[in-house]
Length: 114
Length: 113
Image 1 (cartoon, one colour):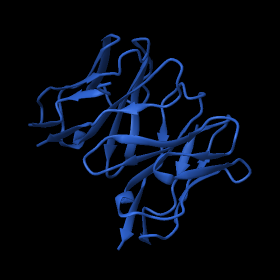
Image 2 (cartoon, rainbow over the protein chains, first blue to last red):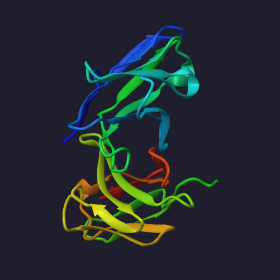
Image 3 (cartoon, helix red, strand yellow):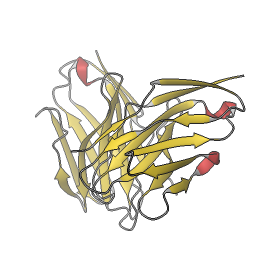
Image 4 (cartoon, each protein chain N blue to C red):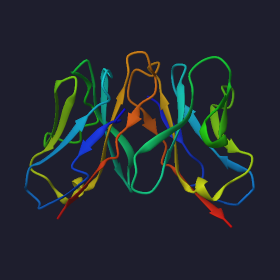
């Protein structure tokens, strides 16, 4: 079985500040890890993914995440928040080499203060 | 590319009625997934297909739910009879043979009164 825990259902940062969204996972096999973003009344859009290889992965809109096996973590960061980053962010894990369905965390609502 | 297409985008129905949600995956993709999103339970995998064959339906909540994929370009999720607790946003996603990421449709917001 696999699971994902996202710490903090709501995170608020000031525009221009560092964004840090936390994700911890459990998986019995090497995981594939994903971050998706959801804007209001829209579907999910892939931000970035880790499959194998380099543990620091870069995604769209200036986001990046680092896979840390020893900590079973895959935290999402962005150096400088923009108002347009306000959205719901989901961390997800797939343990079948990406072949099976995704197990999602509960999501983190990112609020950007002007 | 048109992306994953879902219809209808919104559905309001009365308890006991049959509801059919539709999905057209991205052309060339061979895997299709149905998810449900609620405030209480978040995003949950209901079922997924590879090459039109159901692989894992362990997430389907009850026998009232059924899903089919008659061909590579179309899938349905049916609820019969519907209940108020089925109210949720239902997402369809597809994935290509060589890929490991899923592409999501815009979702169908279902309200059962």
